Length: 209
Image 1 (cartoon, one colour):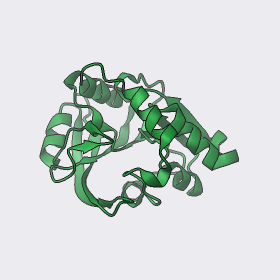
Image 2: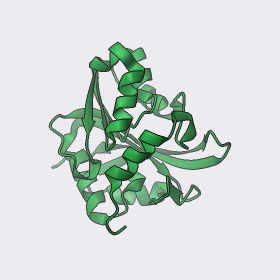
Image 3: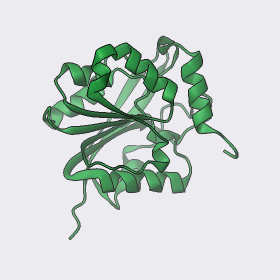
């Protein structure tokens, strides 16, 4: 998309729409929490939520006693909304305002979580940058979980064209650096009573010989 200002777009969304008025609103991120449970992610693990926006995953992580949480989003307005919601608990979280396609991680993570950020990357260079950053910053035994719209899901979100994935196309795109563990499809019911079909895949890093 020529001359599209992604940051400006998302700042406007989070400045003008209520949480319950966005399609991705989800009071309890059950699928994401199930992956944490499946991999027995300890409360001492370093977790990063990519494109976390003002989702409730961070609330649930704090409630479960996780001690090292980072939330990244391109929108400062989104992060400010979560900080206000969390109140005093916000200081327990590391907040990063950044475009994930240009993000240069300075820490190593045990659990990289991304629900619905990756599918906004439609430029091949941006996708490569994202995957390179993930590969460099996930610990050898760490886990990568990505959720995107499936091939049965929407072709657009928030007025922007997205890239749909299937289990096969996502695995193929990541196979240079990651090995698939498991993929599932999930129907997300939006606040407007529409259904969005997602594919969630978990991966582990390929160990260099």
